Length: 95
Image (cartoon, rainbow, N blue to C red; front, side, top):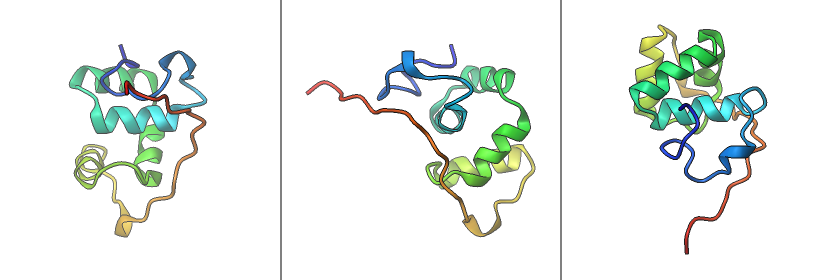
């Protein structure tokens, strides 16, 4: 399942919307997802949508950016990344 505790441990998964929260979902799956998560991501979102996140994300780690930029054959000019917008509310973990 694309939206599970592996990638979305800190948010209320019931409130995630595949369209509204696509930037956040794509970031999380690229950063923390398994091969199965990525396969499902590619079934849900187009390569262009994923590339847009890679080009604008400020949250992806450098190794993750390099890996997916190579996969999608895109250049991440000078590491300039704009922040994506998300309306996700963080939930408190166990104390």
